[in-house]
Length: 317
Image 1 (cartoon, rainbow, N blue to C red):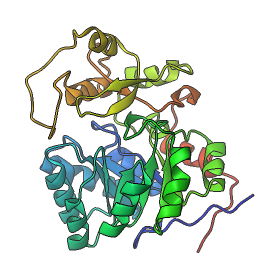
Image 2 (image 1 turned 60 degrees about the vertical axis):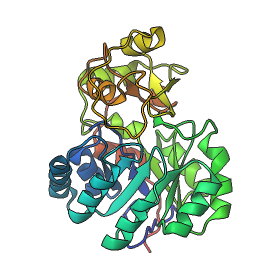
Image 3 (image 1 turned 90 degrees about the vertical axis):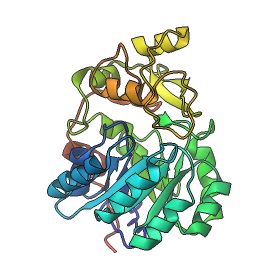
Image 4 (image 1 turned 180 degrees about the vertical axis):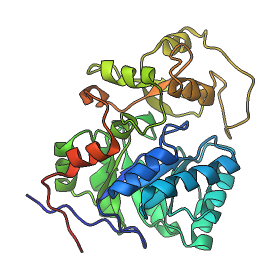
């Protein structure tokens, strides 16, 4: 058995080479992030659409659970509050800044000012090279297999070798990781670490109600489909009553919150994700990765880590 690598991102070195995906809106809050950190991974709070006091509070919650583990924050670049959330998290002592759904040069200034690693999510070698030049400590390669907003229609496993060859910083692979064999395959593929979202969304610590989890458990192969988000990116989601309404052009449009830098106003993505998390599938959009159909039960974070790493050897230095 190949020894799993010890992941080092700047000054951070988690016990296991795994980072939890930052799943908004409020799917991954302090409870999930802290639980992942406590088990030896990098736990992420999803900062998109959070108020600044809420960001501070969720970091406190995560720290109270993490037992000294690594806690980061993931925020959509497309959100109007992106830089304020990231700076507030930095001031509160967050361990890592992860940026997705767009690319920001300014977040690297925050990383330098507070000596915090910046980890962009990328979908091409070109963006990865730029990120490294600007000071990224690592990059996450995310492709079409992943849940939520997508920056490409290409699978991550096609993009990954191009990125890996182009940069000299750690490259994490994201998308399609559900069980231990997926972990083994990712590291045999050359990954320095993995990012896992959907499997952690299917945990008891994820901040979702039962109908959300039931949607995951009922999913069949091929159910995940692409929906155009008002952000201007495709997203992977499961069919719900709400997505039928979006297709028919009858989705409800609440008063605009002005939460996105650019928005098509086709529907309110923030409200749709909030409703999904709360279990209201009449109005909710359930994001999920293409392999969600392989999740057959909801597990605790501790059980997920045991399933991923039990019996495997991993580097200790």
